[in-house]
Length: 170
Image 1 (tube, one colour):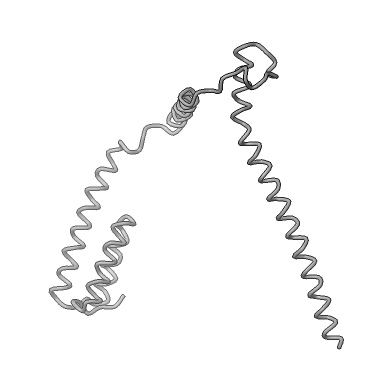
Image 2 (cartoon, one colour):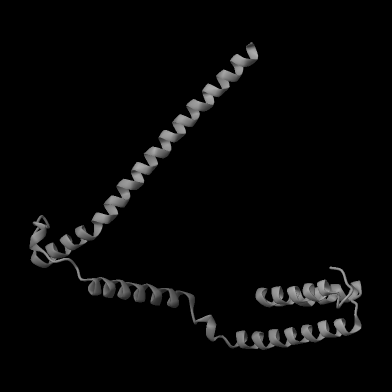
C-alpha cells in the first residue's frame, strides 16, 4: 500500500513538473509570436521614419501621407552596406587566398599523388593481393589526400576488395 502511495506521489510531482514546463513553453511561444508580429511591423516603421526625415516632421503622420520605400531603393541600400562590410573584411584579412600560387602547386601535387595511388591500386589488382605492410603504406598515402579525393580512393579500394579482385584486409 505504501508503495502505491509513493508511486502516486511521484506521478503527481511529475505531472506538476510537466505542467510547469508546458506553461513555460507556452510563454516562450507567445513571446516569439509577439516578436514576429513586431518584426512584420518594422518595414512600416522604417518607411514612416524615412518619410519623417525627408519632410522634417516628427514621424507621427497618417499612413496615407507617405509612400513606402521602393524595393529597389532598399536593395540598393543593402547592397551598398554589404559592399562596405565586405571591403572592411577583405582589408582586415589581407589578400584573397584563392589567388595564392601555393594552392595551384598543392593541386598539382594532389593530382600526381592521386594518379600514383590509382596506379598502385591497379598494381595490387594485377597481383591479386595486398600484404599488410603494403595496405598500411597505401592507407597512409591515401590519408595525405584532401577529404573528397580520400573518400574516393577509399571507396575504390573497398570496391576492389569487395569484388574479390584483391585479397586484402583493412
